Image (cartoon, rainbow, N blue to C red; front, side, top):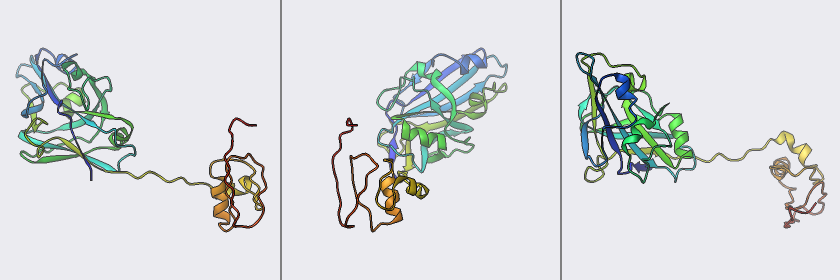
Length: 266
C-alpha cells in the first residue's frame, strides 16, 4: 500500500473574534496562519462566546503530490496524528484549484476562502490523542487523486463550518493534530492508498460478422476488428496493418503480413 506524505507547507488558519458567524466563516483571508507549526491543539475549531458576539473559525490545509497516480485507486485513507483536543466532528473537503498552496508551495492566508462544498469523506465523530486517526476517502476523492496532480484538502468542522450553521452561544469545539514540521515522519499527515488496475479493452463478438468475414475479408477497419476475428477462430488470424478494407487475405494459416501504411493516402 503506497503512502504519500503531505507537503511541508501544510497550515492551520485562524479567524478570531468576528462579530458574526458569517464574518468568521466567510472571511476572505485568515487573520493568523502557520505553515511551520509542528503541532497544534486546535487545528480545527469553531466557537462562539456566551453572548454570541464573537465567533472563531479554524481550518487545517494540506496538499499531496498525486502526479504519479494515473489510475483511480481502489481505496485511500487519510491519516492524521491526534494531539490534545479530541472534540472531532469534522470532515475532509476539497480545496479549490485556485488556492496558492499545493504539493510544492506553502499555503497562504487568502487560501482560507478557497474551501469548496465538495466532501472527500464522511463526518468523523471520534478522535484519538497521540495516535493515527484514519479517515476513509470517498469515491470523489479517489477520482481526483487520479485526475489531479495537486490533491489539495482542508479539514474543517462538519456541523457548523461545512453546513454553514452558526455555533450556539458558549460552544467551543476543537481538534488537534501533528503537522508535517514535526521531527521525522512518524506523525506526519499522509495518505495510504491501494493502487487501482487499468481496465482491459473488451470488444463485442456480436460485431465480428460485420467487421471481418469468414474468408478473412476485412470489411471495416475499426478498433477490435482483428480481435473479434481471433475470438471467432484463433487458428485463422492473419495480421495486416495500414491497408484499407475491404481486403481479402487468403492462403496458409501460417502466413502473416505486417505492412506500414500511409494515413494520408486515399
